[in-house]
Image (cartoon, rainbow, N blue to C red):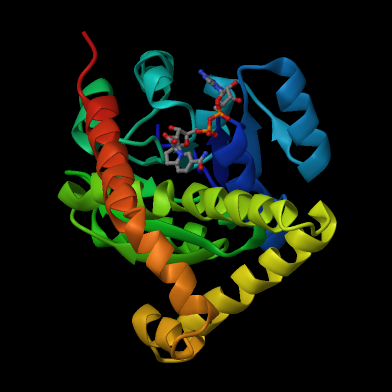
Length: 272
Ligand SMILES: NC(=O)C1=CN([C@@H]2O[C@H](COP(=O)(O)OP(=O)(O)OC[C@H]3O[C@@H](n4cnc5c(N)ncnc54)[C@H](O)[C@@H]3O)[C@@H](O)[C@H]2O)C=CC1
Ligand SMILES: O=C(O)[C@@H]1CCC=N1
């Protein structure tokens, strides 16, 4: 008997990241061949209704989809694979976004030869400004990377790295949106402390963040040059940056990224 013709995509795990990817992919290509599988029945029903996709169980996900995208927490990956493995074969493509979890660990839980691609996306995928970084597992050929790239390209930019770099990528672009949100929280609070309303302070900072990001992307100048252009001699910006240096904000950022990297490695360590 020949293998069944499978098409489409199953998103397994419809939490914050699963939904961000689902939303972007459906917005681009429509709900067509997309299904969702979610442990929480209530959450699953909410996603099915919101995006017009079918809600399926794990066997249903494997039966309907060629690409099975795992978006559960790293701690839940092993349990999930234990229930899913028997339904997957080498005609599937497994795409995992779980931080830290290596392709070798996923492959070990699956039938021999099932291709696995590890991806580190980020939540701006929700607004089609995601950064997704792909690595091939042992059985993933270029065609599998191309397929994963086409999928993720619907929600933003895509790059490829050797898997050894994925924990560093996770610490930078995976967690990175949170670092910018943290800065925005601090800047809005600082504006409020100076007497601005929270609404005005937020508006000023969000537009400033957006403008700065577009300049970083489009101006052809690097961050240091752009910062120099804001910093009038003996002016306000120089006074502000001196305070950031005095509080060693660069060292704090380096320590934060190193902590995220270490945690990604920890999450990837095989379970007992
Ligand atoms: N949140 C983020 O910014 C990013 C998250 N990731 C990765 O994405 C994965 C998910 O993270 P979040 O969405 O933040 O977590 P989350 O906790 O919001 O979502 C996980 C979802 O998976 C569901 N789930 C758990 N076991 C399941 C199973 N056996 N079958 C079906 N559904 C199941 C849960 O009910 C939950 O809705 C993690 O591995 C994380 O490392 C990667 C990049 C960025
Ligand atoms: O915080 C986490 O573990 C996930 C992975 C990268 C962003 N969120």
